[in-house]
Image 1 (spheres, helix red, strand yellow):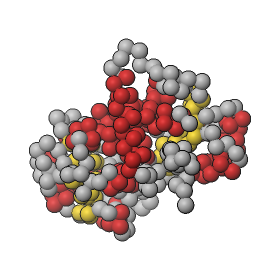
Image 2 (image 1 turned 135 degrees about the vertical axis):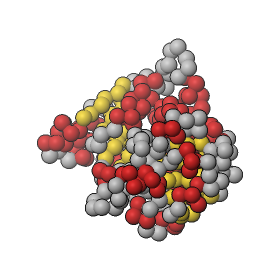
Image 3 (image 1 turned 135 degrees about the horizontal axis):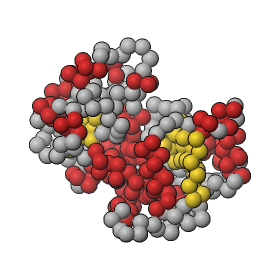
Image 4 (image 1 turned 90 degrees about the vertical axis):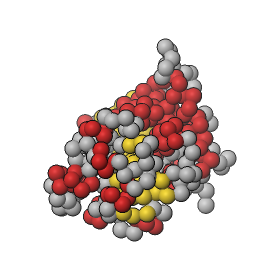
Amino acid sequence: MRNPQLNKHGELQHLLTLDGLPREIVTTILDTATPFAAVAEREVKKLPLMRGKSVFNLFFENSTRTRTTFEIAAKRLSADVVNLNINTSSAAKGESLLDTVDNLCAMHADMFVVRHAASGAPMLIAQHLQHTGRDDVRVINAGDGRHAHPTQGLLDMYTIRHFKHDFTNLTVAIVGDVLHSRVARSQIAALTTLGVPEVRVIGPRTLLPTEVEKLGVRVFHDMSEGLKGVDVVMMLRLQNERMNGALLPTPQEYYKIWGLTADKLTLAKPDAIVMHPGPMNRGVEIDSAVADGTQAVILPQVTFGIAVRMAVMSMLGSH
């Protein structure tokens, strides 16, 4: 069974999930991003790699940071970018997702960047394009439901590689609301694919998926135990908007037990880096002193995100 993200030559055709993506493809994306990271330092930040191509940002969910970095990435590659505010467009009037896609294809779209509250929506679009003979249109998943956020996972891997160089001797901890986090799923898939020997998830039982250890991770319900000796601490946002019912005590209680403070960080290795996909809830999952401290690489993550998204778009747009 061919991976639906790859064409018959084994090249990346869509980026829908990191789960099951071959290691060589993941590594190629990271390698391709490296020269793009240097483009930001140039006076003229444009490259002609996607001149004449039309990229449509289809965001059915709000996201300033992801949408903005995709837009910057596409424009740096000289693509024409169209941002659709779906909440105020035809979808709000009852038009179906696939009708919207068909109409945009009629406007000669070359690439869709899709964020959707429903898991599987980008895959549905990719399958629809195949069935309707539009194999030349590419789809990038910019976050779907609780399922996946592959470009965030990739930019996190790029950040780790930048600061730690090698994946094969690291211990990485993912802390917090894993249950509702599509980012965590993409991080776990990428870390295991790239050969990280120990991936830990740390959090209260109510915020970890059942049988999460089947993803190849070690589970800790104690912050002190889980952080001991780790090289990378990846904090997750508490996703209150996705929670049904009382899964947690108050934010203050959560912070006391699960928030990353300078004291708790001393349990990790002295050169451990602290990451966060944003937006951060300061004083809930992370203390400001840590977020702004010397071990935090949260702003470089955002910068690298543009280079990684440029890499993905240029690879998809090149064939």
